[in-house]
Length: 265
Image 1 (tube, rainbow, N blue to C red):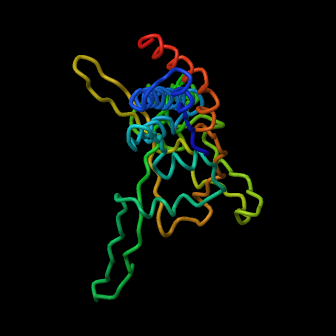
Image 2: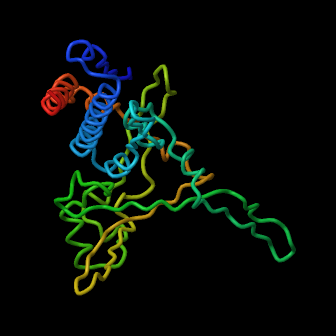
């Protein structure tokens, strides 16, 4: 994005201001404009994002470059993928770099022959699923259908496929992703299990009250099906540009200049 430039040197001759006054006023305007863009950027993220909202907002960082220069930057891989968009990609490549990755242990026969070589990476991935009515809230990968929620709420434990009411006991299929300039063709993929198989209810105590959470776990690793963790891609949200577009820089500067002149003239 092009930088926003605030030049108030023309006020020197028009109102007889000296350099220190111009510097003071410029600093005030820079602070006011950067603060509003920052607030507008956060507001746009809160309005448009869901599961990625919290991580995205935490990575909007204000950088002080001096009296007359401020920057607002977006850090982190996922927030920038959300901001700029991303072509379809294999999520396992990111999983493999996780600090929580573990490795399989070699297994031997009684005679010392290697049965399983070991050394393959794997990662247990949690999916926190919201109860009915939480669709769109940050922190959840989805919302439980009311039929599945009724079963897990009453039964507790861990759901097996026979516990899951139809049609939610069926395995879902990801459609094929056509090839484009930026990505290869990805064939359709059918899950090995229902996405609700293994669903568990956990109860945590907070003082005198308790709270239930629901979720599943899935294993990803070197031996996973190559098509099992393909993300269809992320559309670009362009929230930074929307924040700038929502900020009337000229009016902010005009108001600050007017207020400043009223105090000295």
